[in-house]
Amino acid sequence: RRAPAFPPPPAPGLSFLCSGTGLVSRGLCRIFSSVAGRLRCLFGSPSGGNGGKLSGYYRLRSPLHSHSIGTPLEDRSELGLRGLLPAGVVPLPVQLDNVMEQLRGKVSDIEKYNYLATIQDGHEDLFYAALVNHTFECMPYVYTPTVGEACVKWHQIYRHTPRGLYISLNDKGNVREILKAYPEKGIKAVCLTDGERILGLGDLGVNGMGIPIGKLALYTACAGVRPEHCLPVHIDVGTNNEGLRMDPGYMGLRRERERGVEYDAIVREFVEAAQEVYGRSVLLQFEDFGNSNAFRLMREYQPKACTFNDDIQGTAAVVVAGLMASVRVTNTPLSEHTYLFYGAGEAGVGIADLVAEAIQEEVGGTLEEARARVWLMDSKGLVCASRADKLAEHKLHYAHERPEGGCAGLEECIEALRPTALLGVSAVGGAFTEAAVRKMSEINTRPIVFALSNPTSKAECTAQQAYTWTDGRAVFASGSPMEGSEVGGKKLVPGQGNNAYIFPGVGLAAISVGASLIDDSSFLVAAKSLAGQVSEERLSQGTLYPPLGDIRDVSAKIAVDVAEHMYEQGAATLSPKPEDMMGHVRAQMYDPSASG
Image (cartoon, rainbow, N blue to C red):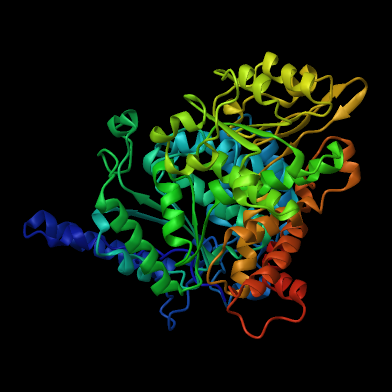
């Protein structure tokens, strides 16, 4: 039986009004005590007065417990639901049809986001039935690109159903107690953010909570990680977004972002508390941390915890999977490409690192030799040796000698370096100009052009632009969903390099075998597994990824491959090792239709 999704509110009673000493306070106390008693008779206490069993009223208010109007008649008396539901029973498939009809009737994307969030707040099985059965249609409203708008407006659209934990600097010394008080005791996957780098939107402070909530919804929808095992967390250390701090509706700390020892202390306290309360193998996914913290936190905690940073490692794996799939289109091995990254933040460098590892595995040699095929551009131009003394540490591996004659802008760098693959991770909308893409087309028969920045408004170019400017020859992928295009009578369908192809399967693997850590090699395994699941038919349409409608099968296969790798690496703690790994992984996967 599932535990409650959140602590039901106490039985009605306003004891805080009874603390005064005046006649008014005593009078209010008598009035509210009388009302509270009547409400208890009608609705029951949270435990129903029955040895801790949840009362019917509070069961319906718990998203993880409620089957709502789908509850069988024969169960309603036992669960205390008589009189709280209409007499008829509406099966989950019928409820799902109604949800999709209502969803399609909404006008704006944010309306659709809010509608699905309302369903999640009331009936999680129904919410996940929508995501599982209509993944391609619903995912853009649950996560990118719509989640970006939701985060910007989070303080305006805040939902009053408790979901996840908000931990701030004010909670120093109390994090363990906060985790122990959370009603779900079987947490296996935590997604945490400090809100500093939300997609391509910058510092949104506590408004960034929409990201871990959406991310964990995809763990469940795409890989079947049970919703009661997932915990979204925001660590509030302030925000440098002055507009938000001044907004009267902003809900976070109204102070500049902490950069010193107090920042590290609250993160450390959380990690240690999570491992103490939920176990050493609890999965901790760091999400949308700023560049100044993302790499160093990954380096610090990767050897100590079952953790990864999806912006660095998950993004890298899904992009490398697309590059691996493109080999079957270009007939050029990874090791023979020259890569130019427009953007050198955590995503760009994370991809570059995994590309170098893939090249090294393909042809041998050293990582330094592999990195020589990878170039980065940042806001100041080409990353090169002459700038080494002023570069952030994570860029130094790619600070090569400048090409002869040098280069300043993107078009000049394309001309000088003659890359075969151009990858945008800059969050600068429209950065891939027509001149730049046409230059790629002049140099290459099948130019690889990946515009990976999210949300769509931040994409370096659109699929239609890439196809038009290359006469349909571009091998294209994007970070957000984009429309296809017809060029020369052929329909081209861009693939979306969505991290949801990677992180749910990797997370499912870690949970299924009790992984003590997740190293970089696990993401290379995941990339290979994903690339191997792209059909020739998809490739012929220009699509480098499997259908999102197959995402649960894709995630299961990735989970199996990564789990096997974890046993080889000695990171898996489940003993003995399952003989049928696919059967074991499938057994862990939640099915909303079975629950509902």
